[in-house]
Image (cartoon, rainbow, N blue to C red; front, side, top):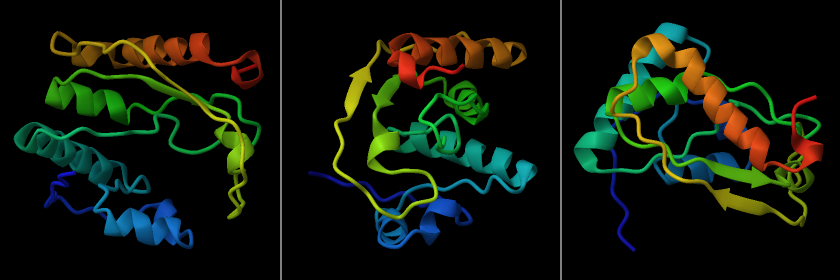
Length: 155
């Protein structure tokens, strides 16, 4: 297995403070975006997009930005769309269900639980327009809703 080092560095996000997970996150050289500063977050996303294209990388993003207490899908943030617009790379939706049973919000304990992972068809972004960011967020959120069990769909 070949692991490619990425030279892009960002300020720490919340996950780095979790015991074990935070250390693994940092040691794996994950890219982190500081959501507490919107202008810095936008610049960070531009750097992420450049690194993706330049180094031919893949990126996993959790578009909700946090975990829900109930396991129901939350609204999506727009950052992943900004990265898609910058990089023009396809988005491959990966719908994971059951994680709220394995790792509850505000808990450090991970429990055994059945998880389901569905990879949906890639979505091309090379023709996307900046003025339609909200439409793209809604479209992809809708795909997730369609592929989640009823108990995890938004109310």
